[in-house]
View 1 (tube, rainbow, N blue to C red):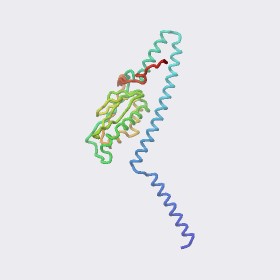
View 2 (tube, rainbow, N blue to C red):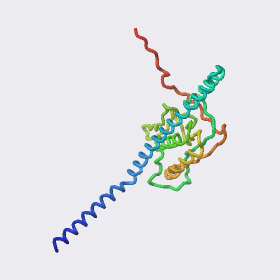
View 3 (spheres, helix red, strand yellow):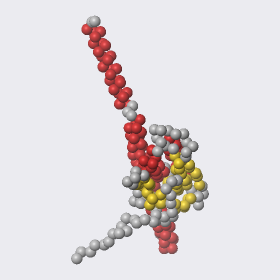
View 4 (cartoon, rainbow, N blue to C red):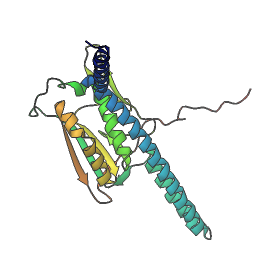
Length: 244
């Protein structure tokens, strides 16, 4: 064989090996790929949620400033504006019930769904992660208030999966145990919230794990009510320390 031909075949083999390596690196195991996809998607959702919250806060403060300027000539008008602002803050903070249009998203077992051995029973092992993911999608796409089985979510809320010594687990919201079906109530922009759940294929993912996902809409200003948060708030147990 000629030297030039030998080097040609050697180069082809090297390129072919490089392409195989690249292809393999681009197609890891399905489980790892799914985990990475969920992690990246969660990070993007959290960033989008933070952006929407900041934009909404800027808009709110601008409207508030205009309202105060308009009421500055009357003490009665100013007091009314302050009272309405306090009520709005309480609703958004979670210390007062929040009422308005929204959706409910219910997760429940469905024995009639096709059995997928690879994912069967997986939801019970990751229920806290999936519900947290759904909550993030809702908050980042127009939800102003959310509760799960009647437990209001605030900035200090927790969604935890607690597993006992017997290996059985249960979901806790704000340290309160809740049971299936899980009903997520979200008040806000109905179209945006439904679109987010559809785009991210939540129903399909849960169906593969044997769980049904039913979304219902409630329009009108009195469509749904999210209850007030009843747990301790930051600073509840704080005490003032005075210098001796």
